[in-house]
Length: 434
Image 1 (cartoon, one colour):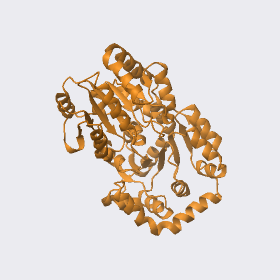
Image 2: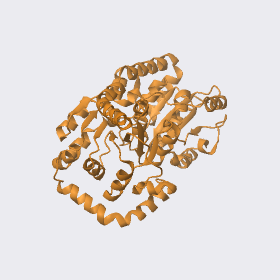
Image 3: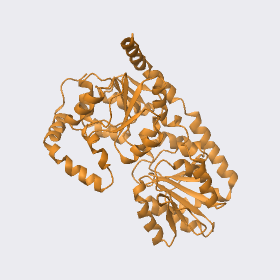
Image 4: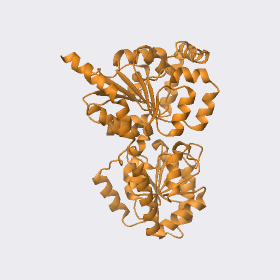
């Protein structure tokens, strides 16, 4: 392990030291923007909201909704071995999802801000026996303080884009000092593994992408049946996990399509649900009627745009909409995850910016399980082809489904790589009870 802390990290730690008095202002701004929960702000300063469970404890950190969703299966595998799990995340939406879908007994806390004092307070209370960090959330103080306490650190489903790799290459000593604190790095794809190894990560294994093994999102049958009854036999176009700028494209495509598909309903699920009211304004500017699911409104025969501005209900859309545009791909975000839509039988549309899931989209496009669009016109044209030709749409959906199912197995490989650590925890528990 690297003992000497590089100058850039020392500067980062010093800035946290002198800047900590500004944390209340940071919280105030984030509260105003809906990015924090007032009743849980103490967690962000490292204070625990509950007691540590007895016995071995695995701490799993997932930054946001996408990362958390990818490790639900891993969490279930850990708890099945009678090992307690603490999950941390950093966003309000991920906390809502955790409340909905974490197994009974699994604890969720907000991850502390990366101030050394907050991280130490967190670690002193929870005393994790093993820390699993998901994808690429590399907070320097979290890593340094955890390693200093002897907590084994493992990166799971490790992801590193080419652009991030190039940025880190400018600071080789800094990234090497952070990665060297990991016991092991389990990478999603060979390209990720090579990037991590080149930057200095020890013991890099390519275990595959856990997101391929995520089960299809659950759904309430009552809610599904209610929505089906409200929609009837209207044709539906879905847009999932959209980002600012993309809803305008989808709504423009709807306006083009409704001359050819007069009864069309377009359902939009924004990546950040609090943006729902703003999307109603975009629809109104296009003289379209919209309703918000968050307000308990259901679509009727006059509804053009149904805005699903809730959390944890993408399973509804993927079961109702036979064609789904996956957002984050027409803007410079890198694309959102298409796997759940493919597993539930949707034909997939996406924009060109899919670097976050490049391998997945490449595989889907290669078998015509997804189609590339770039503007309202191409979105409308491709959606119209699939709305008109059910056989072509079914073939695309089947190709997408078969592709993502064939790429599974990462969960088993990840658990196999982690099993020596789990065995050590089980042995420690047995010894304490002997």
